[in-house]
Image 1 (cartoon, rainbow, N blue to C red):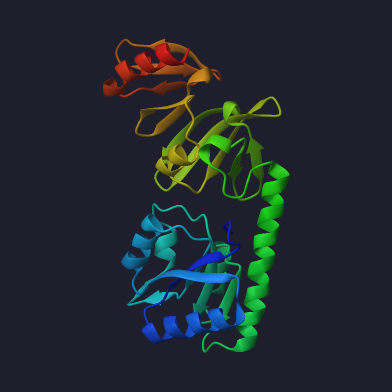
Image 2: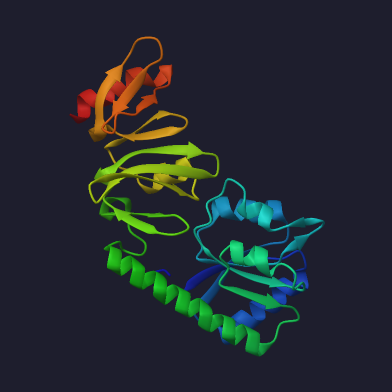
Length: 256
């Protein structure tokens, strides 16, 4: 939620009348929800993920032989809540895997929308409670970010940025290696390395390679022969792109 207390939402559906109908129901029965954009194709939805900030997506499922799930398996981070709105009841298992907060069948009804609205409000409240407990403002500026949430399927790790050794990009996912309770931990989060690089912007972090973002304070050695590399606090050796080694050394000289 934003400072105006509105839940910013998008609608993705290949039928214009369905978009209009859902927007009408939301405006009439869900006063805290503000529709900020719509899309009627999966490529159009992908464009929204890159250009808009929002908290919630109402998604149809079938699009000309393709399903919306292909979008969520792509390179874009899913950092928003999802409600599926569909005429088909056979995608419930896939919706569960996508961690949707509701699954509404068409045609829409007043009761379905009001019930869904209650679930959305509960989800937002739980999100705020988690963020307050972690000490992270809900929409923090980069300068105010105190801690980082690293969420995998089974656990949410709340860590100081200083405790992260490095982040390793793996396509649409990123492996985080960090200190937690005095031990080295590994977890995989469903966000791209580029997304995390921007989200966790910090002068102590440096992109040494297309697949690695390292914490310079956790570097214990630099290898410049043959293949350039850095040795991290946990003894792992991270490759450094040849075109980045000069920048790395200059960066280290100015930050230490």
